[in-house]
Length: 135
Image (cartoon, rainbow, N blue to C red):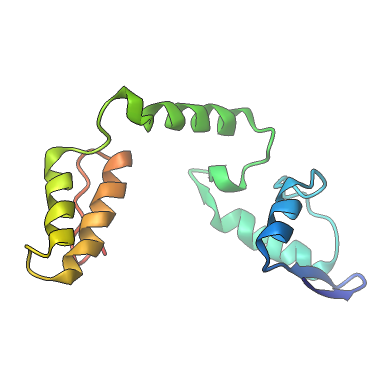
């Protein structure tokens, strides 16, 4: 872990090791409340992150506060929807594209990207189509 600290200006830590990242993510003092406090550069970064990671004025679930009720409801609903015991996650067209790409029976190895992108995209939108342009 590397740290940069200049009082009243910046206080940052760079963490690269998985155990350190896990420990920091569990630290209750570090949450995503986006309260404007601390050194100047930290407040500027916080404001930019908070503004960029919002959709329709709401924070994305990955940056919503831990105790956010809407985040908990959304995560529970997504967990239920993506539960493989409730039925197949992918339609036959998507599975067929993936299988063909893995087997190499389609136009080339570059088809695996759009095929995988479609597989993930269809988990969230049943009509999503992965293609070279979207990939």
